[in-house]
Length: 120
Image (tube, rainbow, N blue to C red; front, side, top):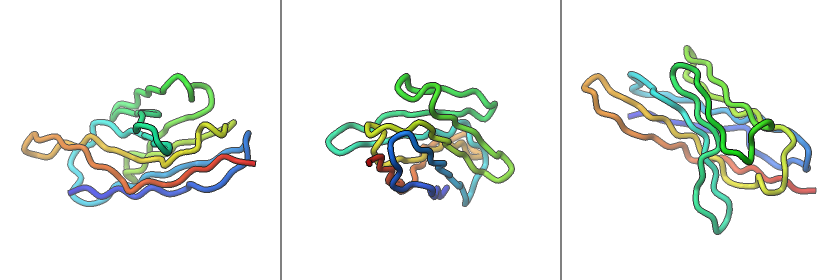
């Protein structure tokens, strides 16, 4: 089992910044990729950004140039730096890892989410 804990959410004014953190713990063998997702009220959960074990990154179009995903492998931590925040970025942000165990099985693990509210 892999446990994920997100932190860093909160209330910020439009144009402001926040840095989210995702810490993985437990029986970690190999993390193929870690992603940040978000879900706004009444909407489906959507992918925000992903970083692979090799450091490749992907972003959804609406956050390109404003958000940066990064990782600290030895600490099993992934960050999401969010700049120039907009009201439409308001959502619960979730961390997900694509994990493989020593038997070759792959599972997705999700965190509990952290609320980000962008409002004046």
